[in-house]
Image (cartoon, rainbow, N blue to C red; front, side):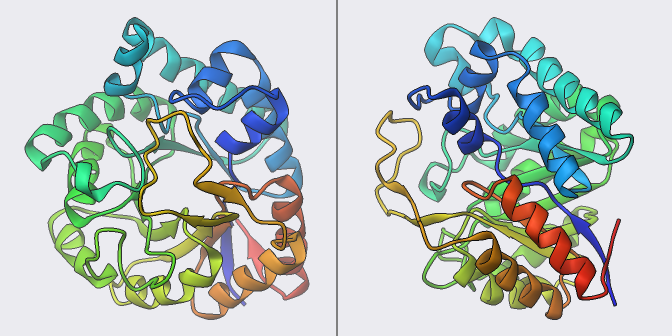
Length: 298
């Protein structure tokens, strides 16, 4: 039986649901500003559900997003707030890994907006230097192209911590990144920079088996954490306020999600969890199913 790193579930959608606030281009960052302590409480619920990782609420804290709302002076402070809430939850739980999240620049799911590596690397390095002293691992997540992944991973080296790379794949063909490039093309990144794990995230669970087939060939620990959206439409633009193109699906029960995740483990995945719309109930059921199948959770 395998030793599994059980990731947490989604943070941003969970914050929106609990706060009742309307989504904005600042997404989870806005909720964290307006509702102190809510991020900590969600981290605590994931730990209580059995997760072994707290992913910091730093995904969308980028200069390009904050500048639109004259909040860029809070760039450093917002990172520290998110880190503090993750640490408070871990201290209460008495265990756990803290993964410092770095999401795409400008917008998610938009490989056409990829920032060149020479420009992206210093932007990510600035964040990595803030996160590094306070996290156990850097998680570059939801990268939609090889170049986007390369820029994030290059900058992540500044943290001096192990780096996990996670990519978002095509919902209809999980063997491809959202850019249309093959998942196996990430070998360009793994050949250039040291990585501790490669994953796929924020795509439908039905796409993850094909994604994992590509990741498995990279020769590193691999895994997946899917979302609970019906799809990400081709014209979705995260920096617009209309989030109608991300529709919550109602058939992805904790039981069904665990079925998907156990299949990923059977493929050799050693890191599994959830992304947007996958909450504490899903993680709790997944933890129970992993243990019932004889797997350990580390």
